[in-house]
Length: 283
Image 1: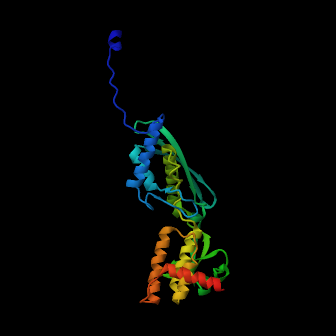
Image 2: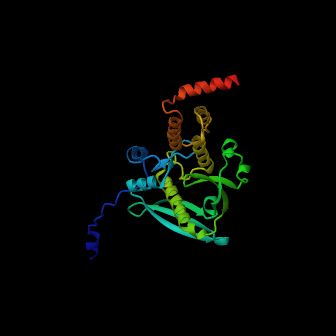
Image 3: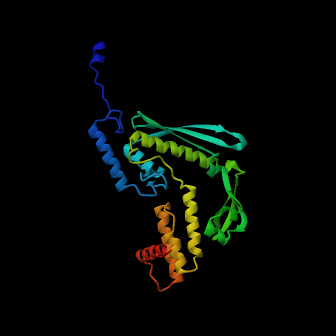
């Protein structure tokens, strides 16, 4: 009986391939090449990755891109959720994302949190019913709107003054905040496990409010321009922190307004910049 057990043939099935703990330098280089190949062939800018204003030139990994990387490398995420109730109905959501290989080996973890106390979820813009005075677009003086807690927002094509106020129905954003925390944990885990932090930074999808306000102000200034010279001054003096994709949108709007002001004219950026420098030198 004992001899039978000793002579028994054990068949070991081939395990599914995935990331492993111990890899050679050649494997590490191969993984990096694969990551770059994924970026080049399957990942799209502003869908899978993007560049966020004020966050440097390193691409930001978005959720869709992290999902593609997980699929290619055979990574299986699992989530542990923790909810902390705060005062006035507010909540903190915390997630731990554990990444496993296809054969069940734990490869690493990522963490992410989000709270309804974050300003974008805690506050909301309340329409005051008052239109933005034209004088504001020239000076950007918040006092013309009512003070520092007032800003501008477009409703049905018209710019209105809005007041920053506490969100009353906090529960309305529970699900959004929960998903954001889960997504942050997932992206953090994928970056950690694949070791691609030299290629990507952590997910920061939301544009900074300052940059967004700048874009909105430029839209209004271009629309209100009453002459070609005024439009030229607005465009040449535009802020430098406008994201590329919005810069293109604003340029199209500028060209459209230019055609409205001068139907037979043609915008020449080089000549306009030269004239502007000459004008500045004279003054």
